[in-house]
Image 1 (cartoon, one colour):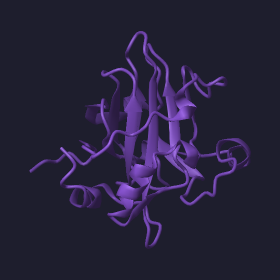
Image 2: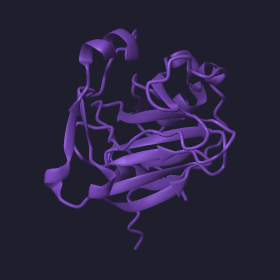
Image 3: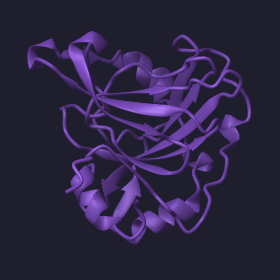
Length: 208
């Protein structure tokens, strides 16, 4: 039995358009050689939205866009949910073929750290003009030395990812930046973030 509850590649019947918001490097980096922001609907691919509808799903209004610069640019360890769970996203990534995502399990749960976002800042900047429909007030992280790496995947094509668990991104390419659009998958009926195990069943004809 496949114990991988972290990642699958997804083969879709179309190729996601390259978002206009990725045509220039971000001006104000939020971290060392990386940046994140919300991509509003004009940057989405409506074919993807229509495809999700067939499965009773929709993208969250909080659609995250990431820039990871070359030579090790990446997002630090975090999760994308108010609890450690198996919430799933579908990500589209453009750039080098050797960028990765790593997933972690903390060795001792007492070492998990809770970080609450600066809500006022996010409302004014990060979530400006966004109708927030998922919890965004806190997330979890830990020190790398307090964790074991439990899975690692090269993200070179559309991917289903478990974002409820601790994970980080890394771009080891020496010259190419890495761009990612990350759609949080919500049920149309009750606005719940679909869990990875359920997504595996729902998308069984498209994942490998």
